[in-house]
Length: 108
Image (tube, rainbow, N blue to C red; front, side, top):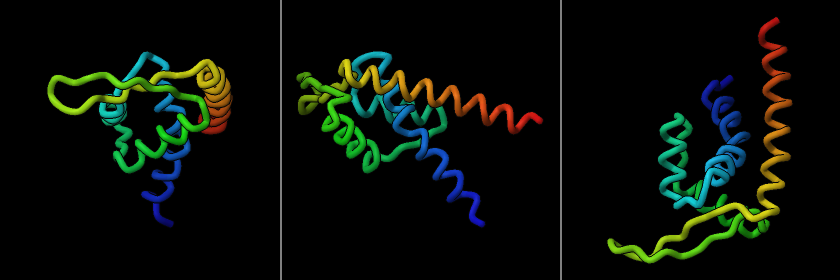
């Protein structure tokens, strides 16, 4: 069995929750999301991040606004919609339940 594949699948399973957690903290630019993920040792490629942000936006969980940049093209900053915040709260509850269950099973 390939441990790297299993580890990758585990990370993918929490990716959306982690990204929404970052955005919940305040309006954010995608490269800032990638940096925060990297700092937490959860590396994400742009080819994964941008489609995920688009999918979340199309699901009406995120909104964005364009901000002019002095050093290049305008930047798109993302934030949670009210629907996105409710979705996040449900994910957070699910995460806590799952983490508690795993903790119980792995400490006995």
